[in-house]
View 1: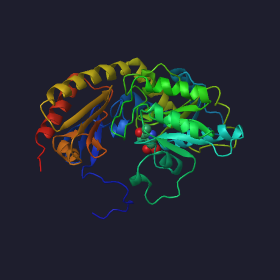
View 2 (view 1 turned 180 degrees about the vertical axis):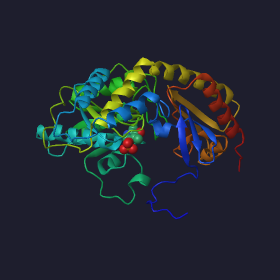
View 3 (view 1 turned 180 degrees about the horizontal axis):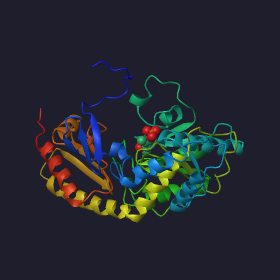
Length: 391
Ligand SMILES: *Cc1c(COP(=O)(O)O)cnc(C)c1O
């Protein structure tokens, strides 16, 4: 079939036409369990009746006026996000990459305002922050960067989960203004840092007046068993980026800042036409209401512990399995070989998963998942791993 779309994705041949809760149906009416959620987006499941009702209601009232006027839902969602994070204010945009762009602009202006001409931001090896130019520059990987030089200047890359390297680099540079990192690396293969990493990083940021900027685009909104991934440590970030699950599929992102950095951006220094419109922010409020009412962080924590235990027990006999990493419902199974083909094998078994870093099965199942559904996932994963053919 000739396609009029740019060839930017390696799409599977499956075409889904309907979703309900944790399930998806393709155009042949096959039913699949969705253990990916469109990459941590549809955390409340598909066709959630309260979300559908909110979209209908708001679309029949008002969708968009632009940020030239007051948008009450945006004010309210900003307040809710600040109360959840302990931060001071929010800038709304439409995606994760845009949220990261805002964070990078804030870091630069925070530096420029202190007359630091070439402010630098520490970023991580194995990171992912999106595909726009600044976010792409912050993202690690020759594959992502190739063909897009020159990237933005002023980024210093260090190994993840390594305080010593940051201390070292801080002694060689006096124009560092911020550190940007994921609290758990998602695209990087569900890499969970040591418990003392973020607290130590917080102290280092305090000692040097750097902004600690945490990218919660994938790990946010109950995914890890807490509202935000950084909340597994007793720290407060200065800047937090969010997107993915906030709209359950309606595009929305936000960059949140603490009191000190809340006044860095001013009228004219940043903006977005669509950002925070009536539709996306009213859906965002509805998403947060459902997560709170259903205590989905708790369910993510419990189901995460359950799937971790099951996977560790049932996969113990396969020497091909290198490591199993779970925090809440961010789940990675690292194998000792490349396993991109497992996505197809899972689809044949009516399970939707993803493989990242070529060797890590990644699952981000809906936060509403229950034990029998987890059992289905575990059974299929065991089956497809047992069927791997060694060369
Ligand atoms: C997905 C992701 C992004 C990019 O989000 P988009 O909405 O695709 O632009 C940024 N940061 C992290 C940690 C992500 O997982």
